Image (cartoon, rainbow, N blue to C red):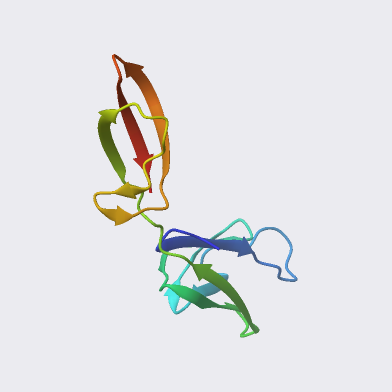
Length: 124
């Protein structure tokens, strides 16, 4: 699972030739986007994902027309943005059960207390 909307896909190229495989000797695409080829490897940058399961189709071809296709899946989960809330109130020994009047599953911490006053930061 990834939390980035754009990913880079890389891999190795195996071909029965002596030496290295470079640009022009092989072509690789990832979901139709051309990848750069260098030193027996390929790299496709900025492959866009949609939320949920994505199928990556990696296609390769060499100079004489041999081809290969590999399918792989990756799951993209949109990251949940954390919010920081600041509370100020009297120290009563109880944990705030509500945040801004709505039920909250936030984790709250009491940072310091002074003269029966406290500040709490909640991440949710």
